[in-house]
Length: 67
Image (cartoon, rainbow, N blue to C red):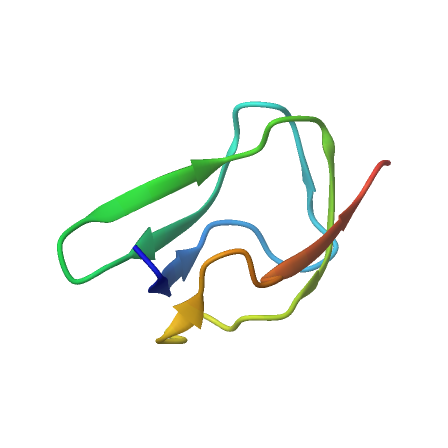
């Protein structure tokens, strides 16, 4: 996989999350996958909007911070 899309953000900017919370769903031409938080934090800014396509793997899609 070299690129994918943002199917849906489950958290909004400014919203807190805990480890294990679902943050977003990404999609490729073959699958749709859930992305869970690894640590507690806050979703500060979304850089790749819901519905974005052809987002390169390892490119930044959001800014998160500790609470």
